[in-house]
Length: 157
Figure 1 (cartoon, rainbow, N blue to C red):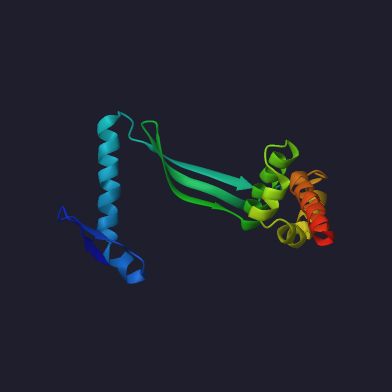
Figure 2 (cartoon, one colour):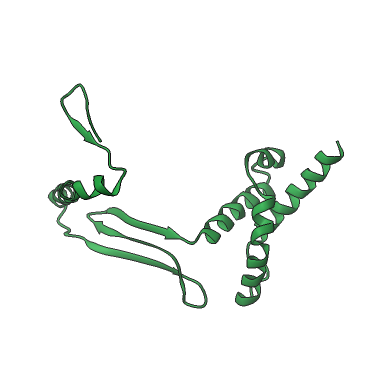
């Protein structure tokens, strides 16, 4: 879909496979334009950057692929397994709560905590055993315990 603004510039919004196919040359033009701009400002012609996150079984569970040049980092792809994203997010909220940087009641109103822990608990327990890390995601578990306390208080009120 193309849109025209008041400066006679058109904008193509790509949403479908056909849109993307029709814009392949445009995609290359953006990459080449970015490359020309960056290399005109630096002497560095750049290099590919690949960062992989592996579990202890050497299985890739996430990573970043991109390019670095002239002090700029262009990330092309970023992926992390959903379980790791969910656990890491909740782990961080748990740390904030434990250090009294967020209010427990507010957290209980803003985020779903109980269901994710109950769904992921067997996976986390398996990871704790497999990796010999009994404290893995301990702050996620702490967060769950605190949310259960609030749930009990609210149910008796």
